[in-house]
Length: 148
Image 1 (tube, helix red, strand yellow):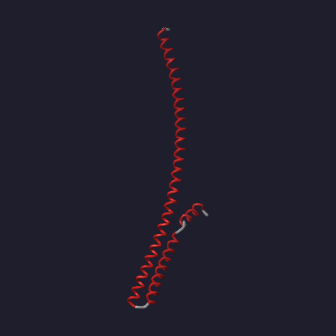
Image 2: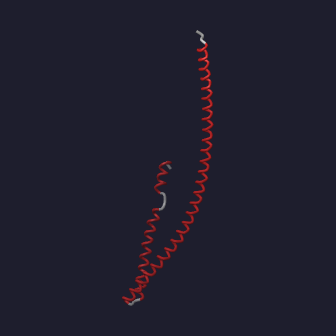
Image 3: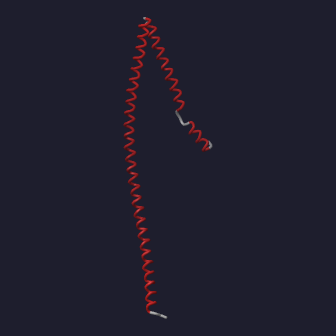
């Protein structure tokens, strides 16, 4: 019953199992090494991405400040143009009233009345818009959230 061929086959199977177990251990070690390498690469990539994002934010901030300065200059020029246009309209209306009625005082009164009407309209809209400024609904929501 103890056949040399059977014994050799059993020894071969045992040796194959030992080789497989060793191979599986090596595979796990390789997988862990690769995972460590990938995690290091991922960390480096995140750091690089963070640096790039920081540089991008700085560049956008500088461009935004430059654009804001230019917008301020352009708005000043636009406002100056509007003032000159309004002065021209008032002058034309004043001249028209003077030409029509021949009264300097009536033309001055008409121009002054138009100027006061324009200022009243501007004031009304400024008050309306200033009431819209703020975070009243946000503050109310936060008070409810924190029960203040």
